Image (cartoon, rainbow, N blue to C red; front, side, top):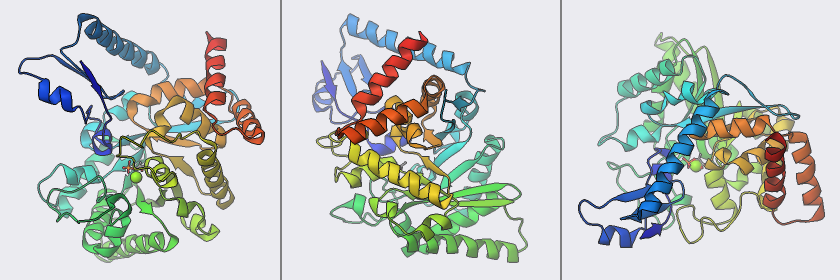
Length: 393
Ligand code: PEP
Ligand code: MG
């Protein structure tokens, strides 16, 4: 018997294979039953046939073999045959993720989801505890950059010790930077902890869910104020500070040039950006797969963001789940995105793919398809990737 559904975002962020809405499986499972959980495809098999179990074992072995093939690429750059090099970074959120940094060949952590440390506790962590934790993260990154995203609580990430807000629409409600700017104490404490942890080395801070310019200006001013306070107390400061905004709402793609110039970097949070662009809840099984990242309207939005950042001279990355999917990663790179951040297991496959394709040629095909008026670029991109794979083999 098989059931299927998807993994909710916070467990995905924690890299925990989890399948939900498998109601018949949970009601029919008995003690001692064999259950196969395929978190990647959102499928659960209860009391699987031998053939299903064997296929499962083969799949796991093939994945392990593929990962060991990718290990040979670890020290090599993701340089395409034409069109430049793409920096590949990993997403993380817990200390336990850091060993993957060297193993995956990532150039750094492009998204460190700091709320995970808050989610796994029963009380708000203290500033010194946080500083100690962030220091250990930086120590374990061995000099590679780590982009710390400040708390993104609310929406799908509800802290067990915070009074739940009774909001009709939490994804569009009081969350992330909105909470940080309204209840300044926690964000201030987190910024202090980050500054202390990065004393004598570089600090990268990213504010989540910025929907308009003034939110970024205020958050950045909070960070500057904390830096002044720490300096006045005679504490050693980070050697360099880069402050970025996550672009997760369509509004920010249309912000003024001055906004983009204010940012040291911008990172597209595609999971949220896509749900707001298509008005399709990322947690609702009925609609979450309905709209395609490679549909022309969404790609047009991404192309516009790439242009706006290029005009402002601000580095741009993409750190949503789509960055780790082959067709999406190739398309983003062809559009001009030069940094992609993904789960560690996707880095090898994406690197291997980028190294064998020609981003200039792919860009030409994408532009031609858009000029022809197609609605979705996936057929063009997947056909190109299949040809690239054939040419190589
Ligand atoms: C995103 O929205 O794409 C993102 C990376 O943030 P999260 O998935 O944590 O909301
Ligand atoms: Mg997000």
